[in-house]
Amino acid sequence: MVLAPASYVFWLVSSLLNLWGIRAAYVANGGAKGGGFVGRFRALGWVLGLRGLIFFVPLYLLLCVLAGMVMAFTGLLQAAGEKEFQAAARYALYVALLLYVAWYYWRLSINLRRLRAGE
Image 1: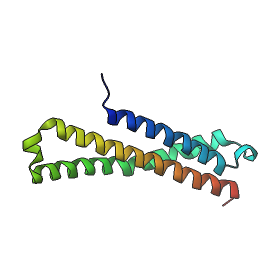
Image 2: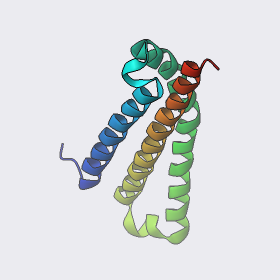
Image 3: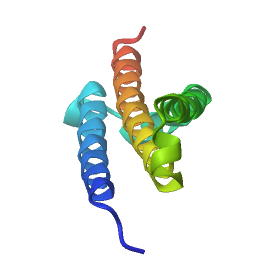
Image 4: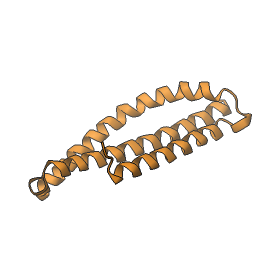
């Protein structure tokens, strides 16, 4: 399977976002002075991951429906065909996944900071 250039960009951005997010969570936990990072990361990450999926899976489906509607109303669906619709759905998935990862690490960092502060 040959990946499209957009796939390479997605994987690069996703990898950088994950590295940044893990570092941000580590710093929010107190860095080298913080304790129990892995345990806290796993415990909070599990809950945040499930909460995020409950929100972002419907968001992705909504983006796909909206992309289909835009393509249908503008006549692109008839003129372009199924490949363009699949590309639009793939880009909607990329956007939804990147938003999910950014939200996940943002919320994880906030919760780790609060846990460290004793709130």
